[in-house]
Image 1 (cartoon, rainbow, N blue to C red):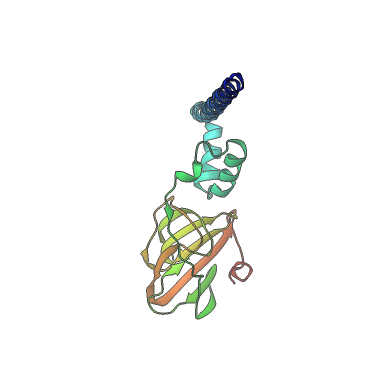
Image 2: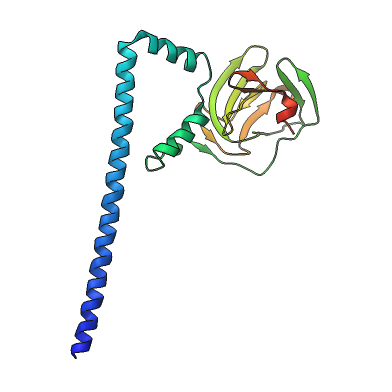
Length: 204
């Protein structure tokens, strides 16, 4: 009888210890979340104050973000490294569903700063690589355009579109559909840090 009571007490103690450990882990995660959230808020407010007080900072931001493409790929990498995924940055953007087709074309030729691809009729254009949509609108010489900053930091311009299947700041995975092209002709431009890249080095 005494042995049975001892075993029951041991089981109770194990359950109690397990429950206490679970509560401690939950509290630890919550505290970590609050700390990271507090850091993000403090950095945001300090940045806002700095911009209001110092005109040079404001001009630097305008020059490097508004005049040049902001590097979302670098920002996300730094965010995940130092802040982590407890505050889910990747879920701020809407993720598009994908299908398993690669970009295919009938022929290619040099065009302006990039390349012109001849496509088959009614072709749904899959993107080359996943990333963040940083522009949707009209561009001179190439018409309706979507620019996707890929996860590797390369900006890809998809031009001469007749329909667009994406919105600004969508996060899109590999092979998502960008839309369709006018007259079966797609214009592509590749850039990194504002510098054009030879399409032959990227397009395969």
